[in-house]
Amino acid sequence: MAATQEFRAPNWDTHVMGLWSGNSPFITFEDPAAERTTVRDALEVLVAAKILTSSQYDERGYTLFYEAVRRSFDIPWTGISPRMRRLLHAINSLHRPKNLVGAGVFCGYTFICNAGASLGPGACYTPDRVVGLEIIPAEAARAGKNVESLAPGHGSAIVCGDAAIWLAERCDFNIDLLYIDAKSIDFDSRKPFQQPADWKSEYLKILEAALPRLQKGCLVLAHNSRNAATEVGDYLQFVRGEKFHTSVNLIVDDAGLEVSML
Image 1 (cartoon, rainbow, N blue to C red):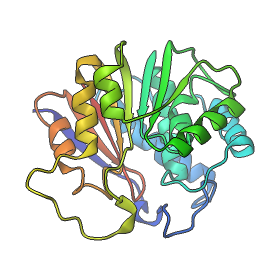
Image 2 (image 1 turned 30 degrees about the horizontal axis):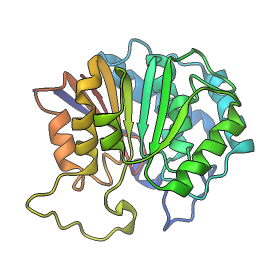
Image 3 (image 1 turned 180 degrees about the vertical axis):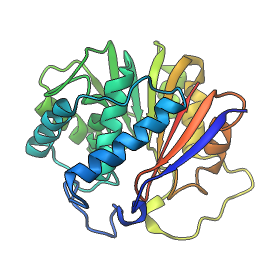
């Protein structure tokens, strides 16, 4: 059984993004110093869980990344709060995955929040492979343009297709960090979720497809671990079970992020 923990940040429930809120990706909920403190506290929980070895990330690199994204990215909407953006970038800059896959990257914003630690302004290391998977053709095209605008000739790949199928049939390398934010249902509708008897969430389908490529010490990050806990309950049960070594639910905002180590 995996060791499981939960971190709840102060005022997590007031940091709400989504279609219904009309929030810009660059909205400000709090003073930057408070945001840094909350993210540092979340990282310390990951250090205590032996998922990370340090909470001291490159804050200057993060600032360069953020300013570049704000200048160049076309983002129609996002569920990534400012706290989550900083947290994702910090985890990647500390873990430094050589091979990273993002499943469900939409316009490329969630992808670059992860991959920005390895490409573009503020990058702190050089990866081997960075792949973003998006099933909606128009958004995959937008993601490609966005990433190219940030880091011309970056060498990463935005692939249009079903993430589970691509991971099962086309992935030919081991993965050091897998980020999942792929929705088979509308998490943002706020309608009650009715789970069929044979239900399997897209999150779990993607994880199961990727498992042969995940090595010991690999990190798996799952967005919406709080606001979609019912919808992705099968996934959360799996990563908190015997297959994974440790899993921590970081509730820094309304959405939450489950960080699991194999």
